[in-house]
Picture 1 (cartoon, rainbow, N blue to C red):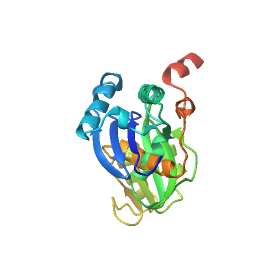
Picture 2: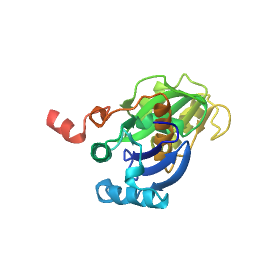
Picture 3: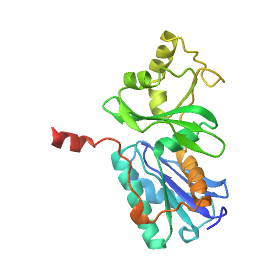
Length: 241
């Protein structure tokens, strides 16, 4: 495998999700999913659309990449199961990319990035990273907390890049907390607490990170792919109750 390998990346951790086909860092085709329709109804059709738009076939794909979570429980299972099935059928290697890592990558270079996703029940999945030109380094562990706990978790930082749908959803709380605690809130400026809009096609960031894994020969087999759930599903919580 080389940097010129064709990478098909699938992201079903978010409601709409996305699919991307890349080679050597170039996006050949990508597609944003419909957040009103289940991934189970559209994923295979959307994959075919992306391949067709790039004038490629499924057999030409060299590596399969997938967002492994956290995120929608059902979406993650659909995406990972699809990638596993394709990998077994095509006999191709896989790459699993944590969803919050892909979100942090979408911001670009920043010493302290807080990536956040809605986790249901009013909570968020959240994790902090340091993003450089070549690496994404986790600065803590992914967790699910209330928006208030998220803000307290990172209250000591004067400079933060907030990103992801969870940050957008709670942007008013973030702004208000910053103002009440003497933090400069500058939108997408260069200092203080900065809020970045969610990327529409997160699969492109999944593909970019998969390309790095490929270059470092960190590929996986289909059997090795595992979802990162962070917390039990609502059904599991009900059973525990």
